[in-house]
Length: 121
Image (cartoon, rainbow, N blue to C red):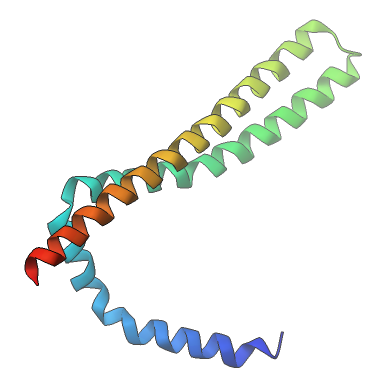
């Protein structure tokens, strides 16, 4: 770990040196692809919330499975666990769909930014 400290320090310094350029870069991207940038930001927020939903569902699912085992598999205790399994599957499918959509949005956004920069040059 100590071997990586100089490398990480150099990377951090390089990042700090580039930070003043960030507002201009973001303005350029916003100017070139405003709607795609807004879509990308919205997708990013939703993708950030999905792991939180997964954690809460996992906790509830474990509690329901434990309750079902304690009741020796009574349907009244098993049904809520199955509903949570379906919700978990839905969240995981949604995460994959959003990941694919974000890739598509980033591609469209990058092409528009590239075209915009070409026109500026």
